[in-house]
Image 1 (cartoon, rainbow over the protein chains, first blue to last red):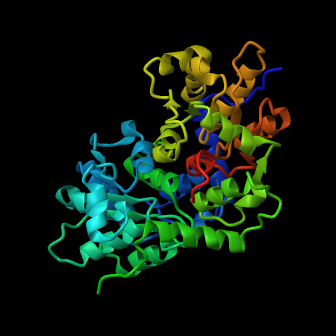
Image 2: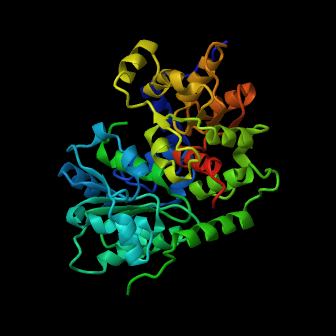
Image 3: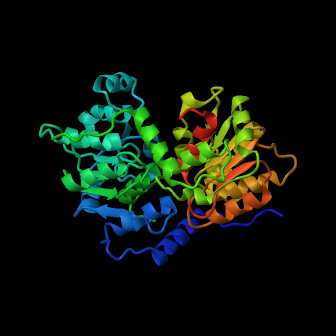
Length: 209
Length: 209
């Protein structure tokens, strides 16, 4: 007997988001933040994630305005850039990941840092006004914060800081939250990752659910 | 003051895996399963994930032998296929995701199913002996199980079944676990996703940590 299951993508989204809104504690999020938090929970399959999500004031509006104005999205990993749903983007925005650039391995050796961190040096021409999305490497987020200590470094519009893991992830997100060089969103602690980061981008890109 | 942080990728991995092995409950996994579970926890940033991880007997050995024998890896989403670390693959294995094939939208309409499910119809020429990795769509896993009800359908070597979310994810993984058409690995319940799935593939591909 073949399995029967919900096969309508739109119905699956509707039921998923209804379940999340019934179960998660979303009251502290404003109207710009709530749909972002809902999608992040959806991507993680985890009610309770919302307790670790933090938005700095204005993040949602600033990030959305940046995308509507045509800002590029700068991603630290291909799993992030590949996950962005292109038809949701309001201005056919460029989605850029420089990690596979052939210059990166040598740059990483010279810098004494990871390839993920070195790849950010190639963001500089696109960084001004961009939406930055770091969903994998704590070293990338730390390096971005160090880049932004230089007042001459171009400023992104907003930063999604969601690296994941056991070494540096919690610390790099704490540092972003303490610095707040621009409006930002984080998932505190070890949790994070490409799927959650992509979900935030896709929610910012369009209010459609 | 610039932030100081661990910049050596190998040291980051070592510390991460040591933390996981100190904190997670891994005793019930055998020598083939343990490194897979550790990488899945690593990708999720979540000690405790191991309580939801299930391996059917022989899964690790069968999946590894398939890759060593040159089997392709069939992925339901680009976030999965893009995450596979190519240098870890033992036989320069093909990594295939058919979701963006231009035939898929029309196939989905004809089938009355999602694009994720329809895309699996294009796996048939590569399915025999493959390592299947479903890290996103419950509909893809359900459709695979229905395809495999036909004895004429080619058999994969092993299935990583880790779709994520609130509608069909838990149910499709329960169905895979009940059927076990071939050796399989699941994350029970809502948790799962592309990062965890990629971690399992990368662990199977190489014992290097």
